Image 1 (tube, rainbow, N blue to C red):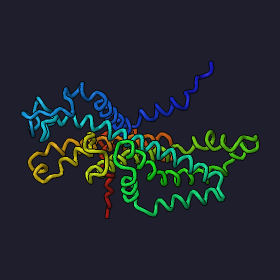
Image 2: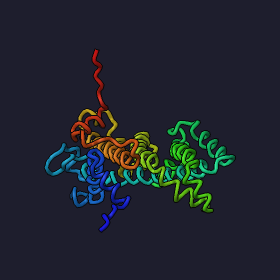
Image 3: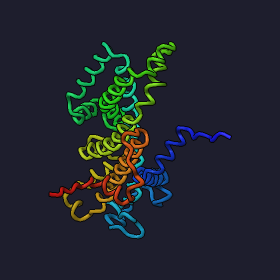
Image 4: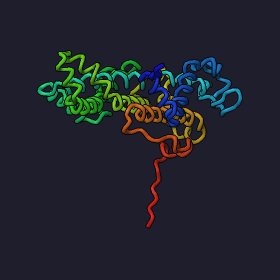
Length: 310
């Protein structure tokens, strides 16, 4: 009997399961997203319910993360805020990556004038700092969750385009591409079915990095009063509401817990991105078996310390 060969997807899942930091990041993301989905069942409070008898309470058994100045449960608002912040980060990153991947694949494979035009357009966008572009689009389009998603997608595709384009420039000269052309395959099939799967590593890394960037960017915009309207709970709006000096000094729970939620989710996303990069790109794969979980986690968080022996 011939031994059954595992499928590619099964091999990828098995390799990722052996990546300790990747699995730790996935666990963190799963817990946060699950908590956000079942926010009301977990917290037991409506995030917009105001209780005049329970204003500015510190964390307790009744309110695990305390209450704000209007008597609203902070734990419930942090969980609900995660829904919108995570939605913005994931959706904007997906759309931006989709735009950059398609344009980068076309530019890298076809080359010529099309490549030149697309590169010049990306250079035009990159001439301005992304924050400036975001502020310009926010001024034009206005605030709102959907508008913020569209703005981040329109201002965040250039890096992905360049990554995918560089991969295609090297891959299009490979022997299997010449064989595809000899068999008469269409350009569309060669680009999206034969070349694109070989460029997944930089795309996945860019996707995960952008999720973290957009969540932090949303928090920054909300802190400036230019992101999602204050009536919509997000992690950024919770931080923005706690920016007064008296709140920072006396009501620490109003800003500490939203900040911890952002840090935890962004860290988990970065860990998953590193794990997927190691699985999808064998050249970057680390030998996780020779590292303890604590050592690997410490290296990811703080970087490896090199000791010089004189």
